[in-house]
Image (cartoon, rainbow, N blue to C red; front, side, top):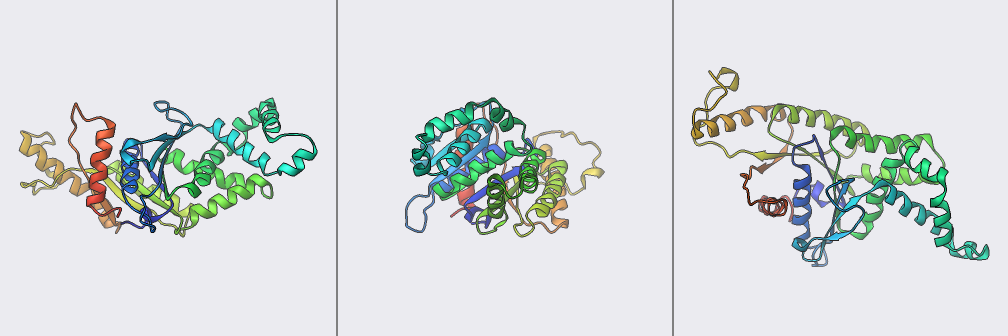
Length: 310
């Protein structure tokens, strides 16, 4: 089992198009099929952000997880309203009852205020704070929370915005919450980062750059690397380097397999030369009948077989 997969919060991040969403779901499914220290099946939450193809802000049980796996697609306004409700409740029921104001009434009045709704959308960093804050809050209710982060640029910006918010509004209750969140993300005992790439030059290079950015934010919590969709090693690899090929085009299926296998091995030298340790996830051939759920199950099987989770 990799170190990152032992932690409560697992952030899966990388360049767009590398398979983060499906791979993070597979990791969540694989974790749900393991047991905690009490011998019970682990309780797992998979989270994504503002995905228009999925129901918003609904906790959906996944049948593959046998009652221990849930999916949640977060909407920032819903997360803000939930956060505000929690803060108002924290004022204390006794104090509010003396004023003859119920928490439900006060929350509704607060959230219906036009200025508050504007601030919820326009305040610097609040969008990212409430999304990550919801993830941070839910960590106490699950053995693992697996987060499908946005692609590299925005994924890093979410963390950076939370840091900026903490600095900009230092001393207030929101800033204190941001500080506590960041302390959790920095803690290698509580949070882990999976950087995902394909065995192609640009994703591999961007993954190295992403690692450098994350190290600046969380220097004591280094990320782990995963290369996805690795093509099977050819039984007849091309002995020449790709830049020495007469043509990049394959002449037949055997030549295609040899060239693709050789090219991927050549590309992965970028990580080898940087002395990056990484986990390989194999290529699963496409099929007209293979939907997302089937692909997730296949990847979860491979994750367990490789001992990534146990």
